[in-house]
Every structure is written in structure tokens, then in C-alpha cells.
Image (cartoon, one colour):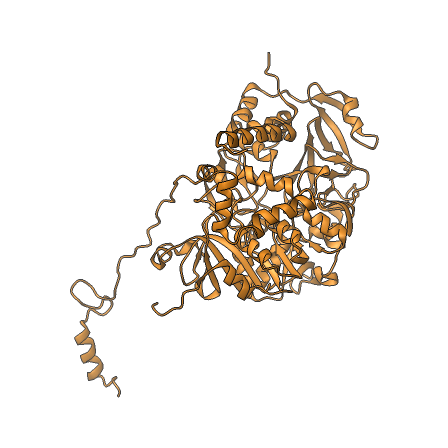
Length: 274
Length: 348
């Protein structure tokens, strides 16, 4: 009997499986960091993990707080600056990048900048950071989606996916050939992009998720693979790694925040400060 | 080296002398170890109408915007608290129409500083951006946000950004000497470029060290003394962010800030307590000890994990060998003087 898992764990594990041994990997903040650590520990020991802050070839000891967090690693091999990370990317030395999704459309274009009008926003989201550059020049991009949403029309196009679909990304001659998002991994399933139309479709569904649950969060008639299969469930080893390495990544953000707050209050109480 | 004037001063004096209303101000730190105390001092001195450059705005940028110091901002990233139900000072200022923002990608923002740092007028950047709203949507920079030119060699179109040379950079580092040599290690990000692009530089540091410490490890020096205008010694100067080798992020305190930044009222209260209510970083630490406990800060102090020493040594330390003879000619000083005289090479 396999060990039960959380949907966050399934997302992290599915992301980690996209990493091949020996590849150069750029990781965004959050769950992808844990995916990178998991891949390195279990099946891709020779992957080189890179951060846009200039940290290259690190072995994380704990989940990183952000992309410049040298506090959570056991040394690293190469220290350069942000400029040089992106020029290495531009020259083609990054195999895979992982990006978190705010809003995503059917061609894998991303919005992480604004909800509503850019000049008079309803919500001002963080912005591009390195995302727009990474998805432009990494050989392939894996999108991870935890709290993001599928949307017909983006309010702002921050990071270029397959643009308007078809061969448009190749035809505009601004990007490496056949680059762009290759997969989107959510807490519900694994999506790929059609090789001709570049439209996103559901390729695998996570164990325990119903098809109608996936369709309910996609505002268009989602295409489904003819050979739709169920994602291989996490192995005990994969689950054990996440629970040891990053216990809060097994949980939802809300639960982690709730438990963190309770713990902080108990510390203050112990110190006589409430 | 004696007689070189010390640049050590206080945050109050440095900000008062070097940051002016209407300046272009750049926060040099990137995501980690930010110059919190220098930022708070800008707020205390109520600077107005600044254009803020920040590679990645965290609580630092949000505090400056909340306090009304910033009217324009050039960035790639701003902090937002609490998902859809949350907010930020930046969002409130944008909605109120009192802040304009130019959004870049990380590389394209940094390229403006790198161009400025080297004295160039523009920089070629990663052109995939042309297919995004980062390229299409512009505010106060208008046509000058990006321009496309033809490469004279390949004849291809290339995307460019203009150089940035902010009036003043504030940044925090691990250590510096009295002359202004600043040493920083860990994630390099775009720290050096932001500072070196700027006309004036204010450095705060965890500790002032002797010049000999700097000279024994020059690869760690990111800013040379001759570029730095002021040095401020400020332990815990980046709190609640972290400084490699000194302390970790204070997640408890940061969490309280994230709660406060969700609303204008929360932010005002927070500024009153932690910025205006503390005359300097010592007063801030006193307040921290009263409201929380020094035990919490102490638990965040870094353990020791030294870098393996690099040998900066060489085979010789002078021109003279153990017999007192010049290593390249085999002569003593007296013999050299005699030859110069004999060959009529001496004047005066």
C-alpha cells in the first residue's frame, strides 16, 4: 500500500520528474526549489541548480526563502552576478526553467504583473522578475501552478509563451527554436502543448482527481489527450524526501501560515511577551 | 594611507548630506540583506518626489512608497501581501494615481545599470521582451523605455535600453573599512552595478574592519574606496532581512510586516512604531527587545562556516634576494649606483 500524499506533494514530485540528470536548471522561488532539491537527491545528482541572483551549483539544505538565499545551502561552486546568469541563458546554457503561474492563457503566456488595467490596477501583482527572460531563452520551460488561474485573455502579458499559437513563436525569430513552455503542472494534473497548434491540453491527471474538477477551472473547452493517463503516484521515497526537506511545502500556504502563526505566538508566550 | 579622511558617519548625517528631494535613488541590494536602516532614515527625513530604482522591491520599497517619498519607480518586482484579499502600499499608490511605475524584466533593468556603470549610453538586451507588455506598456519613460536599432555588424534588429546613472545609491554590506572599501559576499545579484552606476554611494555595514582585513581579501571588495561617499556602521542594519555570515531572516517580524502592509492604516501604524518611533537602529533594537525579545534575534545569529583561505602569497616580497642582490641583475644597490655613474646616466 503506497503512502498517502498531498496535492502539493504531487505537484512538486511531478515537477521534479521533469529534470534530467546533467541538466542546467533555473529554479523560481517556492515549490520548484523543493522539486530541484528532490531531483538532485533522488534521480538527477549531476543536475546543476542555478538562481538568477548568481548562485550556481548549490545543494539546498532547507527550502530557500527567495532566489538570493545563500543561507539555506551547503556551499556552492560558482558565484557570479545577475547579468552573467542571464547572458549564459541567452547563449543557450539553461536547459530547463521552472516558473510559477499567476494567470496563464491557452498558449502558455503568463501574467504576473497586474489584474485589471495596468495603469489603474485592481490588483498589482509582483511583476516579471526574471520570468520573462527565462521563458524566452531556456530550452524548455515548466510552469507550476498552485494558486494561479487559467484565463481566456490576460490582462497583461508579462512572460511570452507560445504567443498566439501555431508557429508564431518560431516565426518572430526572437526566441531559440522550439523553446517555450513544454508542460504545466498543477495540483490536478500535467498539461502539455499541442505540437501543431500549441494549445494546452490535459495529458495526465493526478490520482484521485476527477476530470470535471480540472475542466471546472479552465474557462474554455479544455482539450484532453486521447491517451489521457493517471500520473504515476508518488513513491514513498519521494514523499519522505519532501516531508524531511520542506515539511511546509507538503501543506497549503494557508495551513503553513496558520501553524507558523500559532508557533510564533507560543514562542512569544514562553518569553513572556504576548 | 595615513591622512586619508575617514568616511565613517551616521545614517542621519549621510542621508541628510547625500540624498535630496527629487533625486533618483537606487537601492543597491537585491532581495537579500537590504539597507533597511538607510531606507528608514530616508523616511524619517521625509524626502519627497524621489524616483526609486530597485531591482526587486521587498519591504524596503514598500516602506518608501507608504511614507510618500516616491513619485516614480523603475523596477522588475514588487512585494504583495496576502494574495487577492491582501494588498501593498505600491498598489494603493498606483490606484490613487500618486505613483508611476516602469516595469522591466530582471535582465533589462540590470542592463541599464551596467551601461551606466561603464559610462555607456545604452545596452543591448534580451529581445524576447518585444512580444510582451513590458515592451508595449510604458509610463513616464515613453519612447525611451526601449528602442530598437540595427546592429551595424549582423544587420539584425537589436533591442536596447538607456543607461541609468542614479543620483545616489544606498546599500548594506557585511563589512567595510573607514576609507569606504566595501566587502560583500553571497548572492551578488546586481549590487555592484547599482552602486557603481550611481553618482554618490552610501554604504552601511554590519561592521567596520581594519584596512588590513580588506587588503587580505580583495576579491570580496565590490566597491573601491574612491567611489564611496559615506560609511555607516550598523549592526542588524538589514533586519528583518538577512545578512550572510551574520544573521538569518526574521520570519516572525517579517510576517508581522506582511500583515501590516495589507492596509494603509496598518502601514501607518507600523511606520509610526518601527520607523518614526525609533531615532536610529539602536533605538529600533531596544524596541525590538521590549516588544519581542532579544532571545529571538540571538537565535538568528549565523554559525561559523568560513571560506577556505585562499593563498594570496607569492615567491618573493622584494626585488632583493637573500644576499642583498637584485633578482634580475644580480647586483647590489651600490654596484647599480656605480654603473649608473660610470655610464653617465645620473643628472642633477
